[in-house]
Length: 441
Image (cartoon, rainbow, N blue to C red):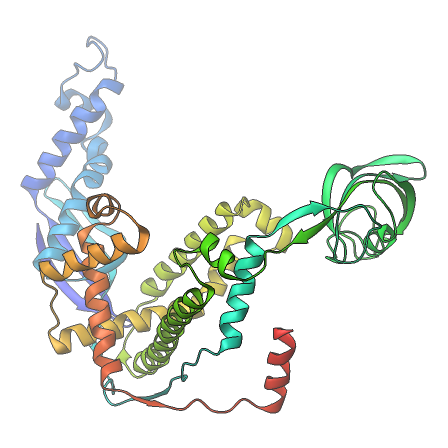
């Protein structure tokens, strides 16, 4: 193999002209013959026993050329990339130029990691929220904990809004039961809006054991054939339940934590909430800074890098959907979005991510950042503690290279954040304050 030319193109693309000589090509042809001879029959020879020269004389000397090229080309390409010390991105576009007994020539166009020029990355300015945890915040967290530890108890009275009614129901369209309209022992929170409008309201006032027919008209924009139809649901209330929330006192503290008093639990919650909010404010501060650094780089970014990142985003999205029990096909049917549209939507965030990754890489190079084995082990220990696992088990799931990448990336971000100036965030406009207040209610 010899590289005849290495031409730099636009958008960090390179065109490699590579020649595979006679000796290497002859070896590939021999491999192709041994691979194919079992499928070739010649008169007077058992399958797989026909000599190569006989096959070539009957079918032409080029009979094994295509397979031989497919055998030799990948290795020749990789050798050429190594010889030219190219940091390639993605897969090459290959054009075969000449093929003959003396070998073959091909041109491989491939994207390479672009040269990156950093803009300003030290002494930047970004807003950073001041962290405060008030007594009301702690009380709200305690209320959440109490809600999680609540239980449903049956009560002997009429259904009210906010209650949970355990019901049997069946829907009828002109006296005929329709598909999907039946349920038994279904717990329905009254006022949750989970059922068709008008259904939950008509359960108010019913008691356990009571049955009645409910008239319902499905909305015009309902997703099934029942859209706009007037139907009847026969409903039976099996039980009326209310949420029993435990009192938030010392006994509650003992039940849900390692503390003996509510005061101790509150102190611990405040410390944890403060740490959570400080970590969140730090991440938000760093995100703004790194966005500025990423936008300030100069680089001829190849399309292949963006496309590769877009595919990663879509693959991650597919896995998220699957974890929720939804296939990509189901999602596409629900939204009318195909994979090509998902990839197109992913291009803009993919470009931002690529710029960010290039910026981080450039900082690592500029600052000559390194990661020691001790730092890798310390990060393993941190991850193990976070997930309550043994360090050796963590190592089975996370490779050292991934941990090393996390550590050095954090170092690069710290270079930017440690030299940055934190400023007070701008006050929200009156309209935004009103919206935030509404969201909190």
